[in-house]
Every structure is written in C-alpha cells, then in structure tokens.
Picture 1 (cartoon, helix red, strand yellow):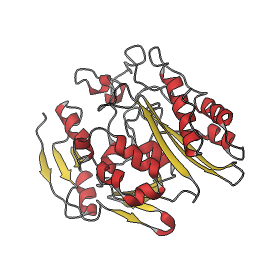
Picture 2 (cartoon, helix red, strand yellow):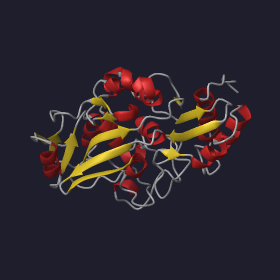
Picture 3 (spheres, rainbow, N blue to C red):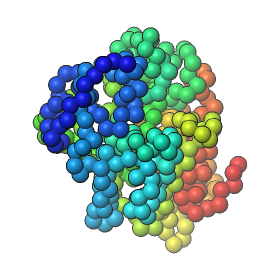
Picture 4 (tube, helix red, strand yellow):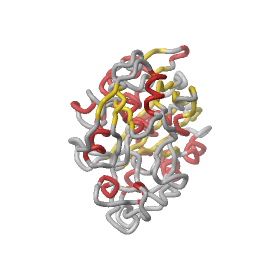
Length: 331
C-alpha cells in the first residue's frame, strides 16, 4: 500500500483548507479510499481525518418533514433511523441493501456518494485507462458486462452509489464547503458525466467536502420503493437498481412521480420521460409498463451488457407498481 500519514483538522473550514493542498484526501469511513490507496489509484501522501468533526454524524428533522443528513452518518444508521423510514423509505432501503453489515457499520453517506467506480480496468493498477488519464476506455471493446447502458461515452463506468438514485428521486440538495466558502446544489448536479471530464465523477473542487445532504419531504400520500437486482444475494454490486416515488389522488391518478435508476449509467439516472407518461394518468400495470419502456428507450448497450436493459426495465415497472400500491404480477 502507498504510505500515508493522517492529519486532524479542528473544524470543517480547517479541513477544507488542509484538503486544498496537494496530495491530500479526505478520510471518513475509509472503505473505498483505502482500496484505491492499495491499488495506487489514489496518490495522497496525507489523509485529512474527518471522523472527529462535530455535528457531521447526525440525522436531524427539519420543517415540513424534511431531513438533514450529515456526511459522516453511517449507512447502518441511515437504514435504521425511524425518521428516515417514516417518510423516505426508499432511501432507508437503499442504505440497507448496500454491501455487508460490517461495511454498513463503517461506510459513510458522504463516502458512498463520492466513491470511485468499480470498473475492473480502472481498478487494475497496470492499466492506464481513460479515467486515469490514458487514451482509451478499455471497456468499449473489452469486458463490459457490468458497464453503462445509458449516458456512457467516452467512459462507460457505472456509478457505484446505492444512495444516489434514491436521493435524486427525493430531490435532495447537497451542501459543499471549500476554501472559498459554501455552496448548495441539487444532488443531481453533484454528479458529472464522463463527456464533461472522463477523469471525474462529481463536481467537488479541490478542498471541498460535503457538509450536509438535505432531503425534502415527499407529498404526504407518496410512497417510495427501492429495488435492485444482483447476481447473488450475498455481498454484491447491483446489476441495476430502480427508485420510484409515487403519489396518487383519490381516483388513482398519478399526481407525483419521480423515477431514478442506479448501476446503469455513469451518474444516477433520472427518467423524466417516464415520469411524464405517469403524471395525470390512472396507474395500472399497462401504464407502468409504458413508463418503464420509456425509461430505457435510449439505452445503448455494449457488446456484453444488453441483458441489463430488460432487468432495469422490469425493476422500474415493479417499483412503480409497488409505490402505487398495486400488486406485482412478477412477469
């Protein structure tokens, strides 16, 4: 493993100043960071330890049923919190499905959002791929079974965060603190496509850290569902995941619809065309099927990952039906 030392900031502004200096990285749970140090993907000589910073490990209720989640909140804490389960069940379920119990007790919300991709070419220390400053994405003509079917190019990684699709569906915002001050943006704008810069997955500037994630309450009658498909039920990364936040009126028509997918694109992938099909229409199985088809209409699979298209489409359809309180037909 690459050798490193650990330094301790007194508060978040001090952490931001320390991180702005070269060859430093933020240490929270350390699950992904230590992996990248072992593989010499991360080049940090010093780690800025965020673990002891006060107030960043709490889940607070805000007005109107909103949540304020600190970046140092553990995934296990998020999954079990009554305040999260009460109004944001899809987020709690996404946290509960991540990794293993041991990792959930260590991994943090901020780390889950900012983790690096799991592409085997990127993780191979002997391969200088496009994401590491090389000339090509080896997945395009190589082994691409787990790569992007939406939004890919020139890099075809998929974003590994379980939480990100749920936070996008709940219209969350993220607050970032850097040497130049604080800024707040929609969580969907935190992630970046490789077409903008293939070496990045998010907009964190040098020295910036996540200080909070704010999740507004969905409509009172809305239900949220998170579903994922994996090759095995023990610790594994999703082949695809889907989040649906659906609210119906008294006549069964959709008055609120948010759909997002994970593990299918380099960012958590929102499906606005599918949402438009749902809004104002009476929810039934046929409508859910049309919306799911629209969600994957732009899919462009590579040579070996076309199987992900029907899996993702089925997950979206089932998530819509379950969020709308309609029995699943399992077809």
